Image (cartoon, rainbow, N blue to C red):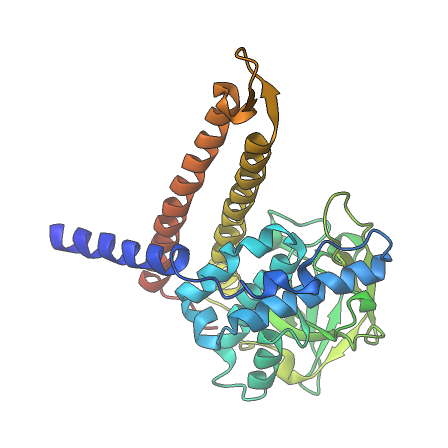
Length: 352
């Protein structure tokens, strides 16, 4: 038992060193014009495209491979914790969804679908906007009850349809505003000869970067104050015809509907963990800014000499506490991530 524990501690320490104490690939990128504060005169479309360009630049700086995404290597972890993500949360949101949810969901099917290799590489390079559409306007936490249907047609293809307004796919960025072709993994209910055979992932083209695909309607949400804009939207399908190859999986009815659903969304847990971990670079940036201000801001002390406000306990104690919290969270992220990986490797992911 002790030997096993020692091995786990050693693995956590090694991962911690690789994630937090190795050089960051984006040091040169921080000096590029692309990463400088955006002009307030930019239009909404220009600001949106800037965020997508930053996402692509981050992707090229890290140059992750399919193995990095599937096995969640230290480089995959490090990308999510990069300090540059604190300056543009939209960029890391796009990358995390594209890598973790899109590529992570599609990858297991690449062995039996050779045509997926090119799509995966385009997603890794951010040559496309790769999205993951699970939740609906009326089904968030109860996404198992989603209403979007994919009905098997006599020719082997599928009819993808949004049957009610509440079945609109909610939030994933999906407008031509980004200037990139968009492809999404759409989680829909498979209907075969009138029988509901549970949810399945389908690979669905959304737009060519200029126009939406036939039968696909996107209604963009207004931009959120204080956030770099990405084109979050509601997406509707009006009897969109898909080829047989769009289905990622089989037509067989699963033995256990719940296990089938959890298998379909098996990358969601990792996504939740890494996006939550994004608070760490934010804390670091806030601490840095507060510290710089506290040393620069001076007042006149009792002795008539200038002194930095950092000398006050009410100023430096919260900063020191924040530094300590960031360090603890760094270690806790490694622990939580390792536990997640252990769970994945010890649990058989169902293949439908």
